[in-house]
Image (cartoon, rainbow, N blue to C red; front, side, top):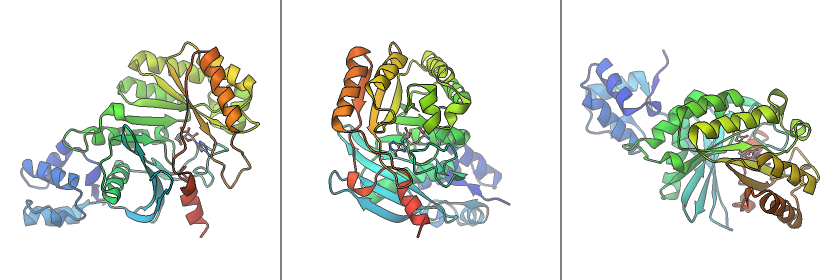
Length: 344
Ligand code: SAH
């Protein structure tokens, strides 16, 4: 029998679990509070009766993660973690300090099956999806390792969050719980390569999170070259889903665009992108591409980036920012540490 993964459960579900194991309901809340304090074993929750602890050890599991590697940037204090999971897999998380608070970028899957050509996380395909507890543990472990509170979460690490829809949704509600980590939905961003069906499902949840859509090309032809998902959904279909999402949630969508020299960074690309986003409730985030070992992609030069941003911003009035690069000295973009580990 599979053991119950208690860290993936809501307080009410732990109460139901307690009752089903012959305990009183309030024991479930005590269990939840203990877990929330970050205990490593059930025995550390000292206000629970011995017989309940015995049953929990037999029928439930308390998941944990180990810090396999921890790289601290000398440039800006960004910390990159490789966390080991109980089945021997590993995922990456990144802790970043911003003026508006500490942000953790977490992974949602081990590997990824989306196949974007510029991304290191997808090179070996998808191993498996993460449980809600494994996503929660990335945030909690980052707090423990740094001794600092986390106020923002971005789901922009390894994996495609909407390809692990149910677990990701449960995770969002878990970290949002007042009696838990209490991280507001407005402090959470979720990035997708554009899974249209799941975007529509997400719109129905009417969450206050920020949705980021990885665009990376302004035409179907170019997008299909670097993102296989573009063969399933063309830009017209994707942008229609984005419009439905903003209509349902009234939230501005953030569009991610990794600038790759000679591939998608010409003035013509900027004009096409400006036309695509003009008039939409949109923010454009330009990311100088992070070159990966498997591909010879190069980052665009500073001038090309500025010229690109000037076109989208001034000619088309699209709110545009160029992402500041954090942790440049530690390979802080996701996928590369785990890939390196697999080669050992
Ligand atoms: N699967 C989700 C989350 C992935 S990572 C998605 O596709 O959005 C978060 C962002 O980093 C995405 O926009 C992704 O396209 C981008 N990214 C991946 N590899 C990159 C690289 N080498 N350089 C710059 N951005 C990259």
